[in-house]
Length: 73
Image 1 (cartoon, rainbow, N blue to C red):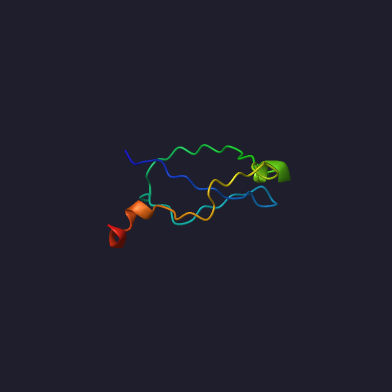
Image 2: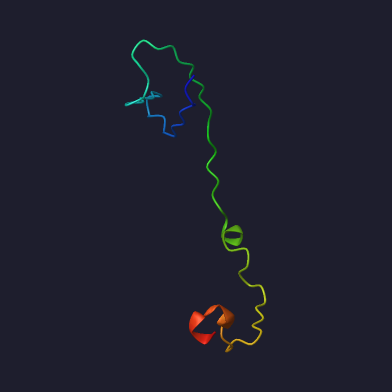
C-alpha cells in the first residue's frame, strides 16, 4: 500500500480537473476523494497580533549572550 498523495489544485472554469505525472502504475485501481479547501485570508488585525502592544526593553545597551563568546572565557 502506498502513502497517500496530496495535490492541491484549482478546478477549471468548465468544472474539469486534470492531474498529470502521478507516481502510480498504469491499470492500478485508485480511490479519489475531492474536498474543497477553504482559503483563509488573514485580516489585518490577525496578521500582526503584537502590533500596538507595549514594548519594554530591559537594559537595551547590554551585550547579548556575552557568556557564550569563547574569546571572553
